[in-house]
Length: 251
Image (cartoon, rainbow, N blue to C red; front, side, top):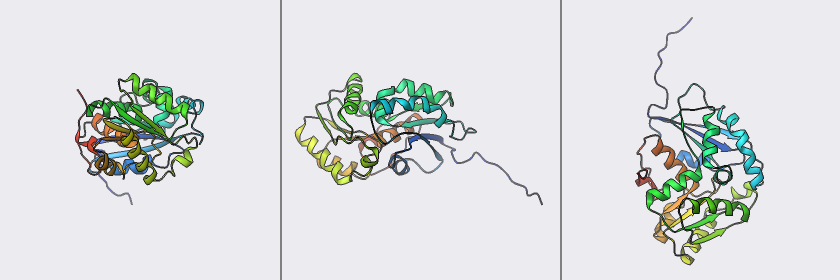
């Protein structure tokens, strides 16, 4: 017996968002669920190959793999925004090249990445002198720092866990991240704290760090979620995740 049915506009009646995650990332997917609106917003994930060792040459390899990863997102959808979820690789490949690679598959979608999102977030908050915290090895941190300074930020303090294995980065505790951020704030004349890396678990401690330091905190995942939402025309303000979500894109 063939049964009748009706169709509707699907889940993403407000926006369809896509996210390309590293195969080694254990954090971004879970944190994005915390940040993203639920009502009428669909969030789809795909994965891109990445070895555990975070080095410039392994990060650069992902540029060739981005189109194939993007192609695994639902092809029937008109995506509003697609985010590429790797801060360090974005600094090596470049945000423009990341966008071009994704738009080979979804030419109409707006594209962002954590580097572009952190820059946009800093501009929205009027940040000039951030303190900068990373988990990366020195050569990877240096590339990321260069990109932020090229965007006009004067990094007044820097600290790193100097860990090259992404599997270990995902296990760095929230208490360790908090302690590092507080130490950086206490020893640096900064007007914000930037915590880089999608595999660092920052979502649950952003508000606490802001309360203890009096400084806005920008994490890779928080900034990426905010930027994707604002590019999609969503003005939602999820609570408990820092001052950023109360801001719109800078004009």
